[in-house]
Image 1 (tube, rainbow, N blue to C red):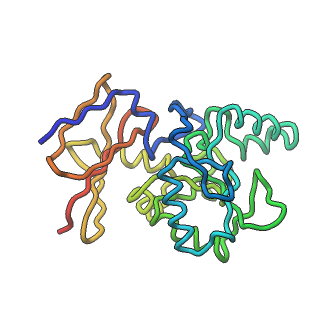
Image 2: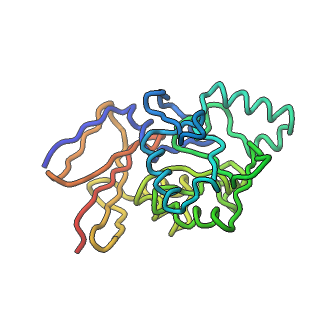
Length: 253
């Protein structure tokens, strides 16, 4: 066994952080951790690992010229500008539904992207990304590459944002697979994981040749420590609230 240590403020980092109306983004955005989504949209930035995975998915679909990214990472200043402009143009009711408060936007994480069917006159705030054609194909395969549709229809009271079929968020594998099968939003998924306290129980998902064990570790001390088997693959993500999500990978049986 080996001891793994994390300082408490690392709960604000990782692919599974929850950023919404109740939990602001508290991480540190760095241009060093970002890169352009592709050679055409050089001003659209995302976390480096997300860029690679997104382009693998687009290449799989042969959708390079059919789907475009209209928004990726945003600074807080840019989010403020978008929010204020929307207030002036569309009013408070529209803005509260479709535009996150500055400091509370997933776009500040570098893990979220707004997509559009590549056509003339794309609406920046509400781009067209229908559930037909290549967009439907993207939506069907997205979870296999770690992406979720972040603001689904019927879950507005939970997410605090209106239905946005164009907004996708990278949460990583296997979490995206589980969330699609359970129908969980990111809010609901974290509530589910919190039922499984690390070292006592875990959410198991069997893929045949391997399985994953997912659990929650509260950050109740300045330095959080936990034990892990030697040579056992695992990942750790903060939840941006009060703890960590630990995912352990094991050989299937």
